[in-house]
Image 1 (cartoon, rainbow, N blue to C red):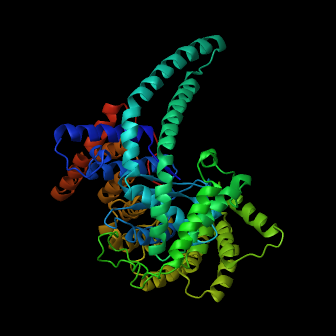
Image 2 (cartoon, rainbow, N blue to C red):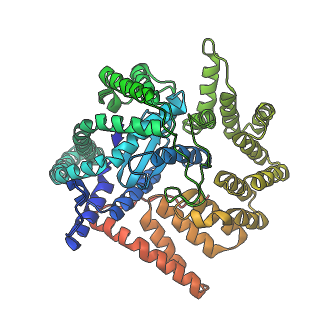
Image 3 (spheres, rainbow, N blue to C red):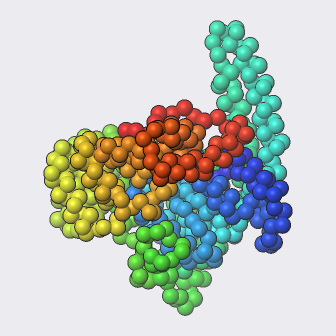
Length: 536
């Protein structure tokens, strides 16, 4: 696994850190020079900016059901870690390559390919506990400290390479009648980024053993099988010949030290933990836990082993991370054609999702109906069935199904967002007002949720509440890494002459919060991307 430090976001974060140190040099001694690089508040902001940037690039897979499953597993592990008060944010990446990474502020990303390749939730939890250990053992901050030392010479070299490449590109362009300087510049930037990343990899390899040791203890305390980590390491080794997701193992992991010795040591640690008297498994935090987001609960029971949601989550990810619905359907046909293949119910659920996304709601409905006879009340299946009715244009049936789900699961984010999205597709004022009502219970806990903001913006737009719609669209832009775009949208909104006092104050307060980010981006020379608005 790795520690993620994108160059542009890192430059912004280090600048903020240096400014903070200049203003307050009396930072507390926490026993490591790494803690002096950046204070916890700026660390959290850097982690958030990294997530926003990944969203801007279209790399994050935001899905309420997947998010709920991943957060449940992540917080269960975090509660069993050495520092349970450390805040964490777990998110899913679309990439089918096998990987996971940690960055500042406790932000941890997991690639879809890792989950698709895993055979049990214990294996995924083993990787996640390893990344949690990178955060709790301060490995990420130490990487920032190293990057701060490296970035000036590397960035200077990059600038020199860019200047040379542009000059060479101009000469080539004049000779060929075209322009190649853009490609040459991109190559120079890529080379510098590769150099910086390689320095990070060389530096962090020394932390892998510690992350394994601490992570496997967290894994066991959380009630997962300690062998899950070694099981997945062995799967990674076998994946040199290609993984079950249909993609080759990335070059980074081929060079990463997942060796026979490392696997053997992990097995020995798991065996030693198994020989100790069984400790009480972590009890899932309740709603009052400061570790969990508002409104999030794992229940009150002590936890052992993986959750029942894993097979459904894996197949949902298989579909959502495919290049397109047709590719997902081909993948399921290939799975069915494999020697000795016998489709599981979770795979049939994945097939139904692929059919639904591919424009075959009737086929999806038939598949889901058969599955619900064997799994009555299964939320993931019932939600897909309600969505199938909506996609098929049977809006009354869809509304009936969604209303039942809302009554059964009033606090479920996935249910409310799916219902509101289905209402938004009807494109009427009445459906917009109903969607607003469905979403309002989520407002207090969804300030940093781009899916909520986008869905609420659409609902408000349909309902004729253009001020709220404008604010939500601007917030969606900000959470998707487009701070300049968000500020421009809010500025245009502020110029309206029909705002009341409270609306204007709310807009101005949000502009005041976003402006420092935009100014720092300009100072760093980070140019905003020109992208389409979030209105869909």
